[in-house]
Image 1: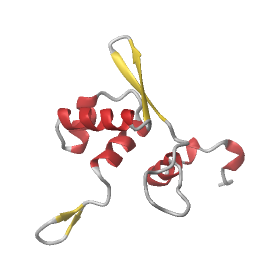
Image 2: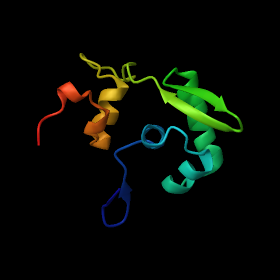
Image 3: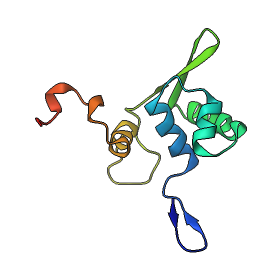
Length: 108
């Protein structure tokens, strides 16, 4: 968030922020996501439900826990000439080269 001297500006929606949390830890509990983002458990539940209904997240049960799988190949729901896939945007925002195949990583 940017402090604009009286208000805050957020560049990412809560949906995007929850998606980033799931990308970072697919086994994260909803209450942990909520605490890390400063929003309610109920809000996170609604957001995950929205993301699942839109097909961007698939929920798998593992005993009492839920694991979330992001459908990284799906395009963003943005009107654009070339729609990047969710996975491309997440990789950019996470700055995580570990998710790239080794053949594509740059030598250090």
